[in-house]
Amino acid sequence: MTTTNPHNAVLSTALAIPVLNKLKNKRVVLASKSPRRKEIFKAFGLNPEIVPSDFAENLPQSSFQDIHEYPVATATHKAVEVYEKMVAPDPENPPDLVIGADTVVLSHAAQSFSDHASFSLQGSYGQELLEKPTDKDDNLRMLLDLNGGVCEVVTGVSLVYPILSSPGYEIKSLDERTLVYFSDNSKSLLKAYADSGEGLDAAGGWQIQKSGGLLVRKVEGDYNNVVGFPAASFIRFLEIVMDEDEDFLNI
Image (cartoon, rainbow, N blue to C red; front, side, top):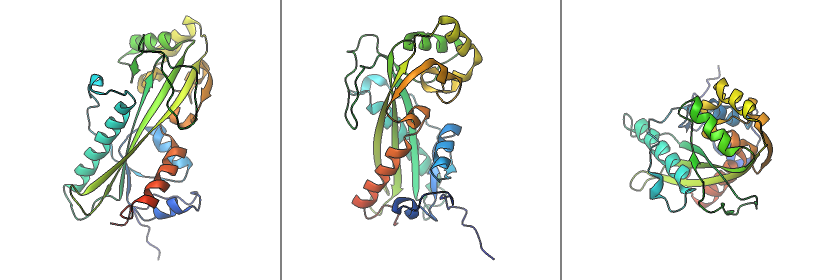
């Protein structure tokens, strides 16, 4: 009789590549309750444990010289909080990998983009870091601000995994940036979308993979990043960490 390892996060549909093979029979944890992120993971063959973070996500934006560091810092806090929460009752059995993620929207991005390079924002005039709207009125305010323009979707991703030296874990992080071009939508369409409530659970107040896609005319960069997780960059980043850190997934 074959016993299934409850911690094996790699599905049978996963590609037979070294980095995913390395995750077989490992305890992989996603520090997020986002159904969109879970769906993206499943699409490329991973089914991590879901342990949502209790981190308040209230870091002061003014403390960051580069606003792109904000979602990375939030993702790190989420991942560390979950890792420490899971280690506390059983220090000898830590998870092999905890993944934290945070997605934000930066309004008024410049209309230029190059792969793996930062692009300028239109000064600081009118720029706003958008997370989830507080209510439907706030959702409509966000959409009116984004309408007809270009915004930048930034996802910070942090990996936390055990090592032998203090403090007992390592942190590796990345950020992925995607430009989203909004159509010049009518106010009636924007109001109808805000009234639907669909955007209340998404940074910037819209979900591109649902009815919110009607508001967008073009995406420049990783589409999955706009949905909530940059799958391609995540896999490439895992490959880099695996090559550079001999302790990765070996403790």
